[in-house]
Image (cartoon, rainbow, N blue to C red):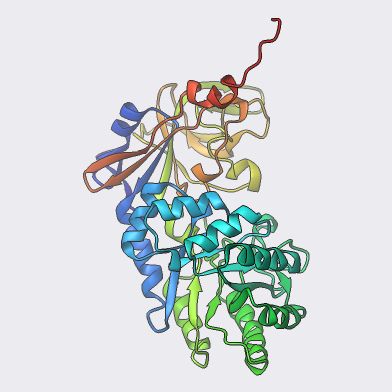
Length: 420
């Protein structure tokens, strides 16, 4: 559920008019609902009350500082994949002991940064990374708590670009190789193998892939115990899906019940890395119509939001519900909602049954709170838009709209004119 509803023929974010937000802050504009974020986090976190657990929000999903600070107040930790995300998590006040560091390409400076910060553990994804982590630990004089990210070769049944647990994916270590690497880590004076990690993909709509992965990890856990290793944490990642169109993902309570039962015979702290299920439906993107254009084959509505603002439709072929901010009751017909970017792939929707929209009118793109602004770019030298957080009847600007001056500043100050 979310707190974006039409009231008296006008879209509201909680108790604030979206039309007024667009007037004040311009478009494209991301709008987040604090009430939705709180509700979704508590629904997910409380689903695992039967087991010791830490719920680490996946920062790559939405890294806005104010959003992270809100979730920190609700009790969230952080799942990070870069030094920049670590900086944001710490700035938002998230406790280091509730931060896990994932990702296949950690650099030396990121490792030393994480070690000095005192994070819970690094999720190691290759033997070479494990060697570098050992060196970083020795150089800093801080033993590295670590887990191995296991690739269980489980098909999550999701889009191939966000499937991460198959043998053909770049992520993790084959489960067959794990005992060898754990044995090596156990003998290394600068490594402390304390966990097992696994993340099989995103936007999962069934519980069964989670349970299949867990069964394989339980066998590994038993084997590691037999080797004399003390495994205190089991990180099962995130990946629970949301409804964009007609998907019917399980409620967090169903996942929590299933995993809690399956973990009954394991003395571990469960680490969870939800992202989209918390933030996805807690945000919308608002865009203003620039032009309408009719051809023999198509009805185009050209808006001021583009693939650089929300790339999911172009990149994944993803569906996002689109609705008028102030519905006019006009005739519905198949339309393409397209942006100003010089790419045919720049669209928010294709052949979507939508009413005719006059230039100047507003559209809301739903389910944009996750992997929306976080994936935005400056392609075509387009400054990124603003972000607003609504909490009840109050709205707070949580990221200023980028100006052209700010966008070009890192290059302008280095510009060499030469003889010209």
